[in-house]
Length: 138
Image (tube, rainbow, N blue to C red; front, side, top):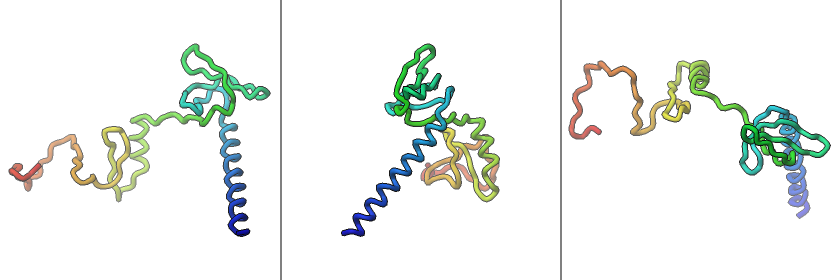
């Protein structure tokens, strides 16, 4: 019984320290001009932070500024990757042993296509070994 209790207390302290580290890293990332998301899903840009009152002025739309408690900020939002950046990253990160492509959602797909999935080629194939489609071909 004592071993189980000691294990429980150990994990409680460990999780508490982990949450403190995450909160400290979030607080260090919160600076004026950072794009953030609140606990209730609202996105905005930090205009100013009042350390003494623990208040943040958040611009949620052009000209609309709200004040909220500093702990209502749940995370700092990183800028999204555009399609051009994804193409450049794809070319630089894929080695010759794997094939990669972008799907309809501009997500990087590695490896062979899934069963039934077709890869759209820009140029028609000139392979003379292929015959005309038959009744059973889909």
